[in-house]
Image 1: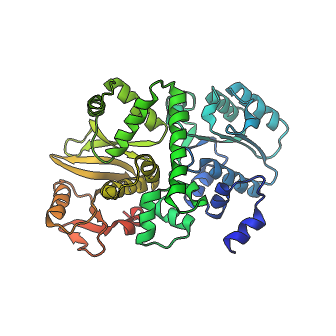
Image 2: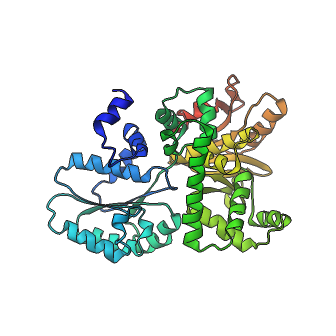
Image 3: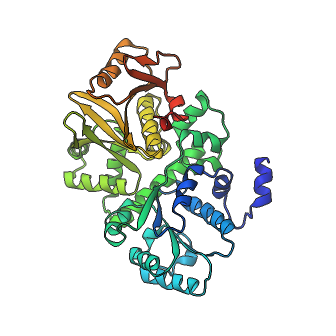
Length: 425
């Protein structure tokens, strides 16, 4: 069935927007097995991630799936971005509404709350509902702080977090309908993986305007408003600095010194707070450094990557000379989306871009643009060869023809890696 025929037949435009139509055509199936695994288990399911990565739509898709499987199900959907739910402001309000809705229900009972962090004291309400009856609870949230300390105390052992990421490269191709190739990959590096861009034209102006709006929403709503930031200019400068130095080790002192050189006074403590706020809002990923020889985590000079390449480009402007940083970022984000924990490796004086671990397995990855220069190849291989253990090592680049093995170090084209190799370690 063609796209136009599909959405004309199945969608009521008065109740659903184009962003949702795209999701119904492309279901992002990676999340369905996880949701299905924990459905109607005594665990609260929490979809977390930056704004506009698709958490709300995934929740609606899952509601549709549950309705098909359980026709007699009673569902309460609370969307805190809609005015009709403005009366639900506290956990007490939420608990009262749920009790009224479910009081006479005989079949399955499901509670879904979108942007639950907007409800004060929500954790006590959902914990109580979970304990009082067989209510299947699903939540979404855009601020990691809400799902850290509060959850640890109120919901210990009773929740599962399901991180929702921007589109991976294969998902980007599915959403856009493009064939894998140099042109599609170049657009992926430029526009990133936010699902909503596929409801727009492919022109840079339209895409970057949309991505800038998301960035502004995150900064103003999830950081400035939540933390009562007074010096918004300083906050924005910190974000721009970290995005501009993405992939390089940074410290709060280095940021503070740079801002002082620009006649912007601040303190190291303030920088640390702002970095944490951006990390909580899921706009930045902080990547810790791992001393592989000493087997310890280093607490200084961590790396930061934007949660989405397109948003970084919208804020800083797209620059061809950033190709190395962009390749590093998309590899990192792909690994995270595929369930790997990722650190920066350190072995003596040698740094390894990524130490990726999952289910007891580990791989060392070095990312480069092109390896045509002998000095470049030797530099990248040196870091991987220095490692004194037997875990596999891989060098990724945009070269299309290259030796696939260099004395125990494998090589692969970045695009091929993103199309599936990350799942086959």
